[in-house]
Image (tube, rainbow, N blue to C red; front, side, top):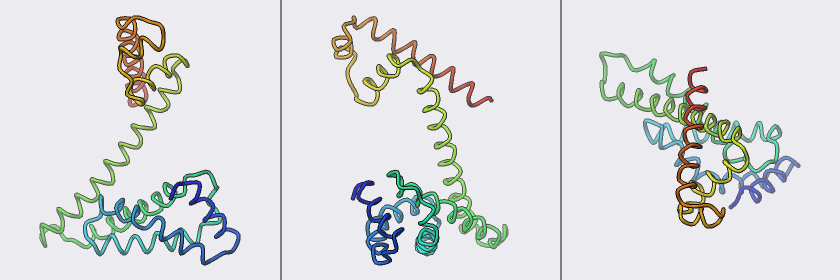
Length: 185
């Protein structure tokens, strides 16, 4: 189910159709379970957080703005609940008790923190891409998002391959400088 179809279901729930929420759950539960399993320390934790996330989602679905981001919105809820659960469990595992439990809990926390860093990095990169001139942004999109070869880029843009390669090098250099400024600021 795509995001537009999902938003249609959510709109029905927001309009009072409580049965439509069952369809929403059916549409997103697998993706949420996969998302949680990448960070949770046990199957029990996955199921517990999944159920809690769905409850919070239902309770707050009226606050969701229909813009094709429902799954991401729900993953954000699940992520926050998972982080809370992992932190709570880390307090219950004494350092001198089960070392394996401690390692699993720490790995889950590190996984969540790593994802936060990745998301922040991607946001910085998007901001840097937005600062590029339109022609440069288009060239980057064609090369790295559309996977167009330098030869084809040169042909499409009526340039030489050398010019295209040098332009891409300079644009990457601008992006690198921008990213460095974003990270240090």
